[in-house]
View (cartoon, rainbow, N blue to C red):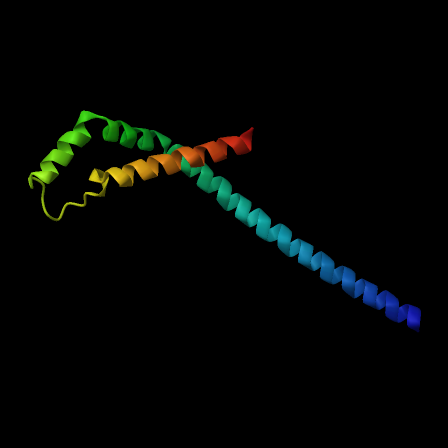
Length: 106
């Protein structure tokens, strides 16, 4: 009787353990699939980020900023792109993220 109880307890423990490990496997697989998709989409965005960087480092950005400072742009125009810190911070974050992504592939 005692051996039967011990076997049943071991079986229940194994079932619980397998269930827990299966749950971890499923969650990790789901998150990895989502992460792979997001990394792919982010890498596809890089040409546009390079375009933003070229704008920020070129004359057009300076001209647009001067127009804004002179009050020549519509008041309701979203102009976060004319914030030096906004673009600079994004470009730095992008650089760091791409280094992390590329480091994972090494």
